[in-house]
Amino acid sequence: MIVAVGCWRGIGATTAALLLAGSLAAHDEHGCWLIEADPAGGNLAGRMQLPASTVGGLERLAFPSERLQPLSAYDAVAHDIGRLRIVTAPVEPFRAHACHQPRLPWVPALRDLPGHVVVDVGRVRTSTPSWPILAVVDSVLMVSSPEVSAAVSSNEWMRAGGRVSPDDESLDPAKVRIVFVDAPGGVPFARTTLQIDLDDQFGAWLPWEPSVVDLVHRGARPDDRRLRRSALIAAIDELALHLKVEQGAMA
Image 1 (cartoon, rainbow, N blue to C red):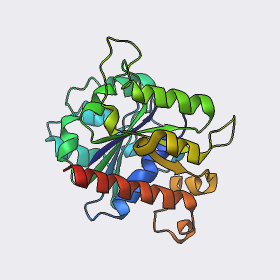
Image 2: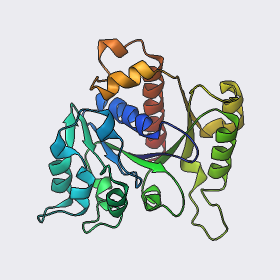
Image 3: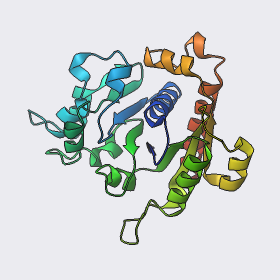
């Protein structure tokens, strides 16, 4: 299963991708890959304690210095945290953007990676270089605040298939779900209102728990005792299970 995580007008796409990948890795013997493919530049290197040799691994994957098979190239640049394997984007946006015009095409090989794959695509526009990734994934999660303007615009974007003009390429709305992060600020919709309005395209409601996010950024795994009572981790686990069941039913 390949899942893309991004946003139209929202917050927390990278963190949501990290949490989802961690949950999938913890509950599947084949683990999970997290590919940071935001063309605006990577965030994980500034939030997590990663070996310097693994930072910007996507660039080395896209522009290899030696001839490798795609799977071997992924293995060479990944940072492992248990069964979670992370490939980070370059921090510098021009270099991150260039990864989407690679010498070695890395997107087709996503389907061949063992286990699940979560791709952080950042802010999604039809003109952004990460857009073609959405064509090969099984599910797309758009992260949004429940604040009125963010929620409405994300919903309209989804219903329009990501198009902002008639000439734009369309994304199948059936594989898109909106995940709401209950972040403070603005005038929000109630959770029940969003669930009723979106029906099957309501992805999840993620509680606002900065302390839990900080622990995960510091390397805590989903089975860490400090996370056992976290409502955020419970919501992520429920989302991961729902995605697996949904993809199993569609297979």
